[in-house]
Image 1 (tube, rainbow, N blue to C red):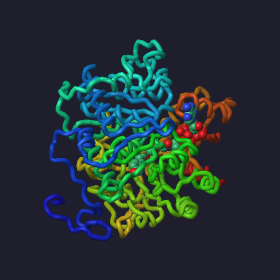
Image 2 (tube, rainbow, N blue to C red):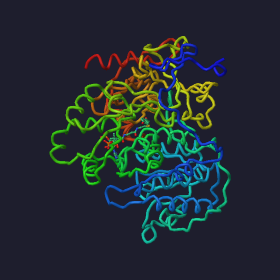
Image 3 (cartoon, rainbow, N blue to C red):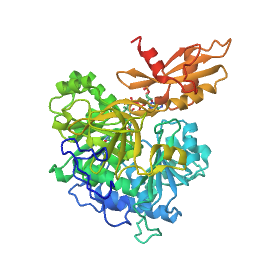
Image 4 (cartoon, rainbow, N blue to C red):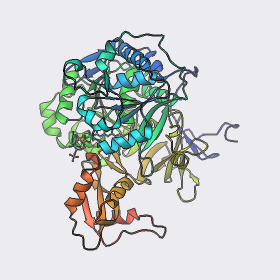
Length: 553
Ligand SMILES: CC(C)(COP(=O)(O)OP(=O)(O)OC[C@H]1O[C@@H](n2cnc3c(N)ncnc32)[C@H](O)[C@@H]1OP(=O)(O)O)[C@@H](O)C(=O)NCCC(=O)NCCSC(=O)/C=C/c1ccc(O)cc1
């Protein structure tokens, strides 16, 4: 029925009573008719007036658009000569750099698949991702080679001046600098890439514990490029936009925005290898940046230091900050607006599973609706579903947000079970976020149904930390919860049951975990208890523990 009759949609909310579905109020995104097109070709064939694509903030080294596309072609030629073919997975372990997009775009142009990982991850965490995604080659910087030394993967060094002093490591088969100097060959061996083929495999914990590879197709990414273009492209009439890239490109937020969407619009992207407040502010001043995409902790830092920052830096070029990755509180928004009256805050809501933005505020007026995550992205549909009954709810009622649209992932890699519990047969993605959609079509995220901690915009799955805690010989039971924090948003707190006779200290627990996980996953508070509250089927009653922890605040 749904497909045969045109649904009657309320123009104001986007809600259709007949099928309890919210439809995007934004203009739909056009997708290329040609089935055989990869996202790199799609991006490179877009017309724009941009000249410089990427600038390294620290050195000023840059790539013009022609230099970028030549580099992508050269690297793709070398990869093809090395035998890389459609479907092969390539690992990229690198901080942000002007070379990060070169590697991604070259790999995807061949129909090969890029998998990225956080450079702060421990060798153990990276080894897990390697075991799951089975890459055939890795790109990394010299400093990070030891983190994958045990993997036996052939390595391409992202190191321009490698040859003279590069370590004599037999696993290092080439360098990116060398590859970029190669003459590109248009008729290299290749297989036809279709929009349905997998392009990226980014890792997310989804709505449950273990980290899983999110399969995004070329179509997913092309649709995301179109969504970003709708938000910032030349269609908006804006010229010469300069964006600061300080959030990591190894996550979907940074990857889709900087290596793909904004690139397509002809924007200039100033890249910082990592976030450092003063370097970021200097870069805004030096490059006259107009847009600053960030995560809430950066906005909080800008707010906390506002008076000194405004006295020291000329931020007059800055037009907007774009916040994503975690919710912004009303008090932070109001404080920022007061301190930086000429800068608009635009918000985005997205997941790795939605290949980036699922909803956003695209102009100041939309952003004035405090607390909203925005309106549905173009061509996106939503349902608000009662988690207990499965009933789809109407306007202004709270339930789990389900999303369907052209950017929704194909599924989790080699994980049927997780895929079928997250994506239903009609293509609906269960986001694990409790939301409502108001009478004007604005989404409000109320709470999280999924068991996830967001530390500085990074996902920390409690189940992973609980399993590690249980591996300690003196711990008999444990539960990990999100503990609220003004700067980080939340951090992991552990409730621990010690074995009889154990004198294990809080610091010993934190140090034990600290050695096993990336810094952003560290447990930062511990309480010892006699038992962990659980329901009759053994599930941790996390809400009770959260109440207990926060009742003393
Ligand atoms: C810039 C942040 C906010 C803060 O940086 P930081 O303060 O330097 O902290 P780090 O996170 O880099 O490092 C964590 C810890 O590691 C430490 N660290 C640092 N480098 C080292 C070292 N080399 N050795 C060892 N320790 C170290 C560092 O000191 C720090 O320790 P601590 O001070 O105890 O918190 C940083 O955390 C950050 O970039 N977070 C962004 C995460 C992010 O991109 N999330 C998005 C996920 S995808 C998603 O949700 C999509 C949403 C979306 C939304 C909207 C859209 O439009 C589209 C998409």
